[in-house]
Image (tube, rainbow, N blue to C red; front, side, top):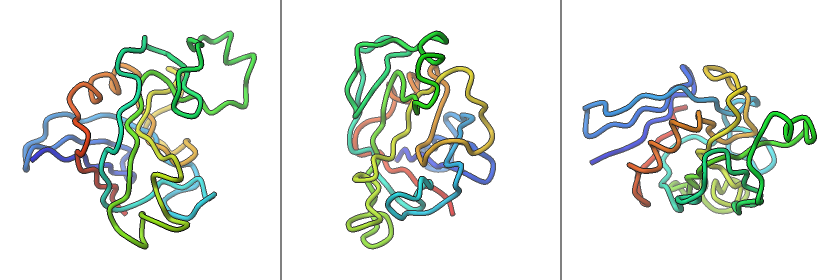
Length: 159
């Protein structure tokens, strides 16, 4: 069985088939650390599943707003026009918590918090926390992960 393991301590996303490592990616998790509370901008811990995959046929650097392509393609010029935007690019794997009271339902619900694994600008520094709670990846990496990850894949975010 294939699982995705997110290791915030070393900013790595690992794809495992049983105990065999299939892929290893550098990521960026929440700048505010780990946590599940609504509005915290922390990365939630525990078991999740990939509930939805968004952007399958979109070009690289497609900009998403509320999980829909905005019609924009990210460029440095666009970034200068909107310096405060939290860029969600290329592909989205939308996570849903599996642990009631920990990351599912109420004020800790990962899906309602819109926590994704997603692409981001090439200028983002990986290997250190910097997101608003999501798991950021290089665009080429999220394309590869997206192509090999079915809906329902289990994702564990380590404490």
